Picture 1: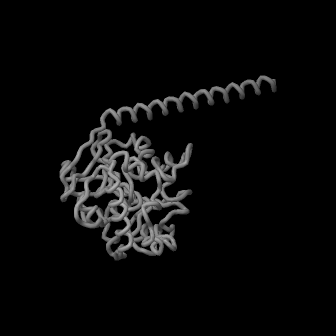
Picture 2: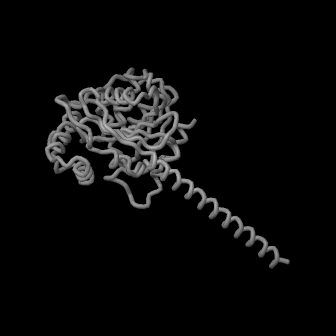
Picture 3: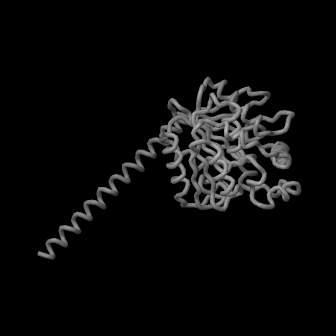
Amino acid sequence: MRAFNKLTINLKISILIALFLIASGMLVNAQQKQIKNMENLKTSGYAPVNGLNMYYEIHGKGTMPLVLIHGGGSTIETSFGNMLPLLSGYGKIIAIELQAHGRTSDRDAPESFMQDADDVAALLKYLKIDKADILGFSNGGSTTMQIAIRHPDIVNKIVVVAGAYKRDGFIPGFFESMPNATLDNMPAPLKTAYLKVSPNKNGLQTMFNKDKQRMITFKDWNDDDLRSIKAPALFMVADHDVITVEHTVQMSRLIPGAQLAVLPGVHGSFIGEAGTAKNGSKLPGMTAALVEEFLNE
């Protein structure tokens, strides 16, 4: 009798394992189909935006697009190459490259988070998009907040990944070391990615100089700037990030109802950013799931 019961239990376990494997296989196949459809629907182009020739890509389709804004010194691929496929179930995704970055041209003016915000708003107007979700990483996170501050009508929800609004939100030593930074200090994957899509070494140096100067001259924003944001917000940061956890908590408390997620890792690792991604890490998948759940609420 005991042998029979044991056999029955083992059989049930085997059935459950088989069902789990079948379900997992179906999920993987569904995800692969979504990614394939997303790539098949991909379009790209350039838009005349405030004196720029701004590069953009549109992946997938849907009613509420998600705009992805890369970090400083980055391209679409370096910030979001690993995340884009994981977000394939969301719908329409618009990835852009900002002033002097990647395939977008430059203009005779310094970079600023405010100007970047105005550029993104102008691009959405050019694409005839009235409202969108916005996700920004690093400098792109700060730009995302400025979009919500300066152009609230076009924002549905925002996701700020390792963004900042005050100098004391950065780790100690960040600003002290910035004046002495050179192109040699720029992460190799970012330099390689830039030259792959825009093989102009002078352009690479110009982008680096403008990114550097933006941070040297960065001035604190007012708390009321963040309090003015009415869009639902999700703040994400790594526990060993360039932006402190304490600063991220502070930002989340300034925006009514904002959500907060602190994930393990370093700057960009939980979204699979090219300079810090770890092979085989499950964190980008977890991040994509958190982002999709927030956006779909």
